Image: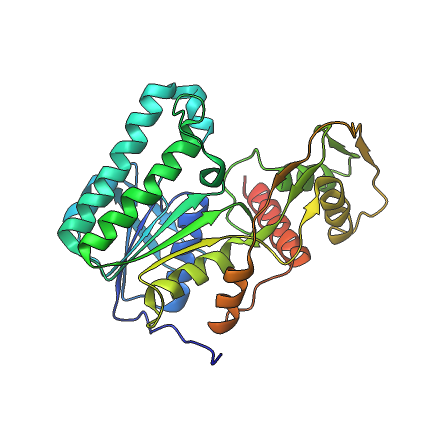
Length: 307
């Protein structure tokens, strides 16, 4: 297949929701690098966002998206799982439903040429019990709701089912990669708490943002496109820890783990064949795992030095 090339973004007005989160921040960085004509950034409240790529963005409340003209909508806003314990199921569902309703209304009023939204691998296994799995069920429902709203607005709909991500701009703790990097950077033996096998496959967050932007600006693609994210290799968390030790120049550090072989494997991976095919067609080289780990570590250490 002849490599596809995304259209220039210099004349486009691109709206990004969840701009201060990990995926949204990466999207804003890529837009600035690519020279987007105008970046409209939205989050839960007013704030500023200083990009490594140069400009400082004025981030506005999500409700203002509805009345803001835009050609492309990159939708990353969402309350993730950790908010459940703080808000409780009812409030969590209400707030996420309100986010989706705002985006649907923006699609109806502004009629952009394309919508990209970040779903989750949790949507692939979600059942029908909202109270048992609010995050997964809501993500699954969102896929249908946003696809329908995009179709009604005449917009291409790109759904990214995001599984595991690495790379710069990680803004919060709780990720295995960040936890292991912190232990290695401190020169400590790496302690892995999981007693069952844990299998993951990573995509660099900047690569993912670049692919997402390209899929909304390239002619000739499907009007309704869903992609699962996966790297070129899947690793068990013990191997991930060893790789991080090597990348950070501490292959001597011991890895402490009490693995119970009779427990089921936690395999949160997907088939990334289509993602990698499109990346090649678009001329976007995807970073390998070791480079992703190095970039994640560099960013985390840089942020720690700023504090």
